[in-house]
Image (tube, rainbow, N blue to C red):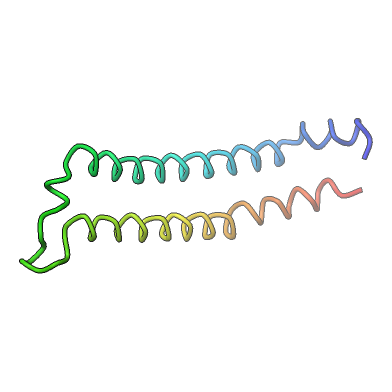
Length: 102
């Protein structure tokens, strides 16, 4: 691929939109996961008593429930990424490939 082709692709409006949408999706989901995970870590560090409380007098604590919630939220964020990629990013990628194909 020649430098001219690379320049033509990088200046195409659909390609620019593709890159921006993918970056926005990636960074927003990354930020969400970091907030969730580090929020949990900060809870463990600064409120261990709250997380150590028993849910109903048994052995399961609030911390276990919150930890499972963190794991489930990570699966949910992965699902959001896949859904957005399949419905928005991939069609836009196909359009760019179709338009810019030699």
